[in-house]
View 1 (tube, one colour):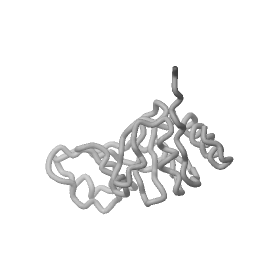
View 2 (tube, one colour):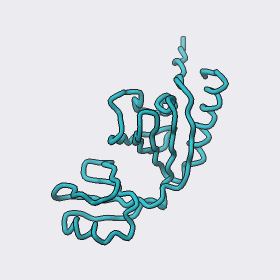
View 3 (cartoon, rainbow, N blue to C red):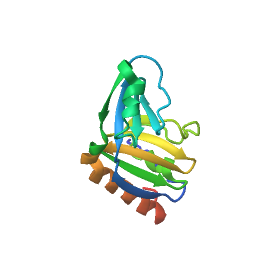
Length: 158
């Protein structure tokens, strides 16, 4: 007998906004600690940070000196902003990550896959997060999330 796993429930409304990620620079820092760079940073790997709105900031290269390297990556990424109490439940659909863990909060990031697509999830508030993914997968993820948001709004659970 094959049992169907229970469907993930989206426990509240959620809205979706998707746009190109914009100005993001990957910083690989192989020595020292991350100095105060004066820009928003996201710690995405043990020795890698993403710097937001840092293009044209020559002072950042001077602060990094010989301790790391930078490369622009924003052109190939999309940023989805999920807002509303249901964002955690929505991300549990087709995912291999426990987004419902209350310890997952602003200032943290999780790299995982959703619907076979590599993503980086960054909570920005109790009721909102940003999800970054390759632009080439935008259509698939947006279709998945839009469909599940509509089903949830209609009261369906599957």
